[in-house]
Length: 290
Image (cartoon, rainbow, N blue to C red; front, top):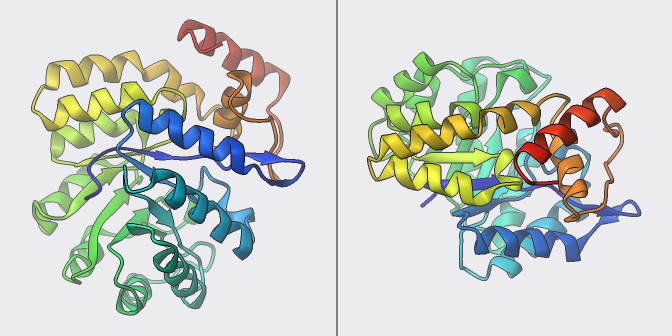
C-alpha cells in the first residue's frame, strides 16, 4: 500500500495559521509529478507545534484534496500513548489510509515500552500502521528485534527507518519478511535501502523535486538499478543542503524561494542564517529551482 515515493509534506502557514490554499496547491503539484503518497503532520510538517485542531485540519485537507488518487499516510505519533491513540482515531475518522507513528520521544522508553506503546495503538484502530524510527530526533533507537515482534501484529505493516544504519535496515528486512514494508526515512540513503529490499521513501527533498524521487523509486522497484543509482547521485547535493539547518527550515525556505508557500515557520523554528540561506540559494540555482 505504501510503496514508492511518499512526500513528508510541509505545513504552509500564513499569518500564524495553516494556509489551506497553499497546502492544497502543494498536494496537486505532487500528484501531477508522480508522488505515490502524501504524509501530512510528520516532522517536516512541524507536527510538534500543531495543536489538535490544526492536526485534524491538515489531515482533512490532505484526504479531501487527494480524493483517493494517492494514499494519505497521516502522522499521528506522540510521546504519550493515550494521545497517539486519540490522534490515530481522528485520522481514521477523517479517512486517512494509514497512520505513521514515531517512537515516543524524550521519555526514552525501553524496548518493551516501545512494543507496548505501538501494540496499544494498533489494538484501537483498523488503520494500517507504519512505525517511525528516527533516533537523532527521539533519543531512542527501536531495535530490529522489537520491530520483528511488532511486525507480527496484523495492522502494523511497515516502518520508516531513519537510523542511518544500513546493517540495522538489513536486519529488519531479513527478520520481518518481504510483506513488511521497510521505507527509507533518509533521502540520502533511499537508493541503498531500496537496493537492500526496501519498498520506498518518505522524503523531505521530494517536496522540491517529486518527479525525481518518483523516478528513483520506480526504477529501483522495477530492478533498474542503473537508473536509480544515477538519480541518487544526481540528487546528492540537494539532499545534503536540505539538512544544512534543522528540518524543515531549509525545505520550507526553498519552497518559499520557489514561490509555492509563504516563508513562515512555527516558533521555535526560525529563518536560516544568512550564510546558510546563501548556500541554499546557490544549490537551488544549480538544480534550476530558483
